[in-house]
Image: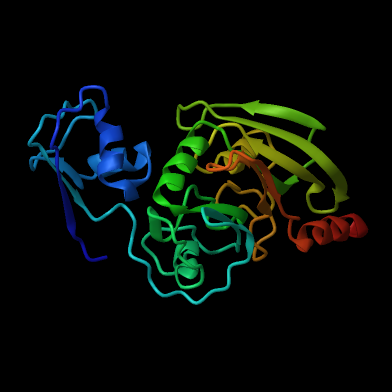
Length: 292
């Protein structure tokens, strides 16, 4: 990625605005408080050539500089990504497994959509859709992207405040309880997952397999995969967290983001976007039951 540096001069005193919020407005493509903090932590965001503090006081004449815009330039990736919902402000796509949402690589959802989705005729339109959140590389399912700077900022904040409710479908090892809540910290941070079991079948290899719905109340990295392993119900195909357990290999991770419920950031209309899990989920459950 070729680097470039953007500069911004503080023209007036900003006593009532936090440094981080000011930086989001100065460099809108950063998009969120988290992105600003990451830019500071990696020395990409400087004040007068020096690393700032999170509670830095700004004064007129200060020069903010940012290396890169916080979003990588789109790279050509010819891949059809199914669009589930779209309007002038945002879109929701069905991410295939094995493709990243974004990042410094070619095979990403953002790169695939860059040459496929038209830029809206709006004053703060982004040059291409930018993801407001991520799902894991091996996870399939719904990902929401913003088409404008304002919507990106709002969606990022909504996700961080749990204003957008997510639901996943998974197959897990064992006979999972009918419903429950997992409240175990991940990397010393609070993490909460709710679940309910849709179907359980006997399995000759795994004793039982259960089809479950998972609702992450918090948003820790790999939260669902870690939590289900912690309670003895490894997600099928999760080699990374198997810790020696035998699981299905070569068929991918049996985890799919199947539902997003939220208020539209512009119209405030309640929206529920949902998809069915891949057919292989039910086929796998049926096959295991038949083999028993």
